[in-house]
Image 1 (cartoon, chains in turn red, blue):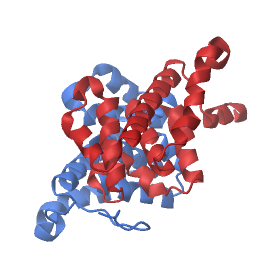
Image 2 (cartoon, rainbow over the protein chains, first blue to last red):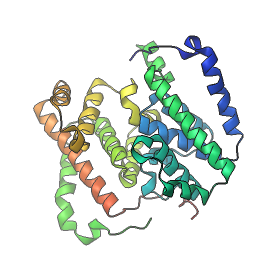
Image 3 (cartoon, chains in turn blue, purple):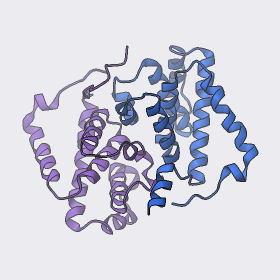
Length: 154
Length: 154
C-alpha cells in the first residue's frame, strides 16, 4: 500500500480548520475516554487503519483498558460500557451508517436521557469529524506509523 | 444484559461435536496466530462480545500484539498482516457475509494461492465454527468474564 497524496501539502488551508476542530471538541464536557471510544468505533465501521492506530494509541495512553477496545465491535453485547457510552456509541453507529439508518428518533431520544444539549451538539460534530477523517485517510491511503516502520525495516 | 440460557449446562451432548471440532482445529497445523485473527475478525463482524473476549485474551497470551488486534477491522488498509493472513481474513469475511458475497471466485482464488486443499478445508471449518459460536453466544446472550473491569454502573 502506497500513500496517494499528502493533504497537508496538497490542501493546507482546507486541512487547517479540520485540525483546529480537535481542541474545540476536547474542551466540551464529554469525557475524553468516551470521545476516544466514539472515534475508534466509527473507524472500525469505516475500516480506517490510520485512525484506528492513532485513536487506540491515544486511548491506551490516556489509560483505556485493552479489553474495552477489543470488545468495542460488540459493545451492545457487553456490560463494560456506561449508559453514556452506550448512547454515544449507538448515535455514532446511526450517523456513521446514516445511509442505512437515517438517524432514527429512538437513537436521538436515548441521547437526551444522558447528555445535555451542548454535549449532544459536540458529540454529533465529533461523529461527523471522525467520519470525515476516516474518508480522507482511506481515500488518500494514509499510511499509519506502524506501516512506515515496517517499510523502513524491510 | 442478562444471559438467556447456558447451552453448555443445558446440553453438553449437543455441544460436544463442536468442541471436538475445535480440538481438531487446534492441532490441524494452521498457525495459531492466523486462526486467532480469523476468529477475532469474524467475531467483530458478528458483534460477539463473548467470543471477542475469549479470542483476544488467547491471542494476547500467545504473544499477539495489541496493534494487530486494534487494526484488524481495517486490515485491508494496513501492512501489519502477512499475505497468508490477508488471504485468510478475506476468505473469513466472504464466508461470514455469505448472504451478501456468495463466495465469489476471486476470493476463492486468492485463498487457494496461499493455502493447500487440506488447509482450505481446515480454515473454512474454523470460519464456520466461529460463526456458529458467535450465533449461539449472541442468541443466548452469553456474558463474557470481566477480568479487570466491573460491570459499568447501571
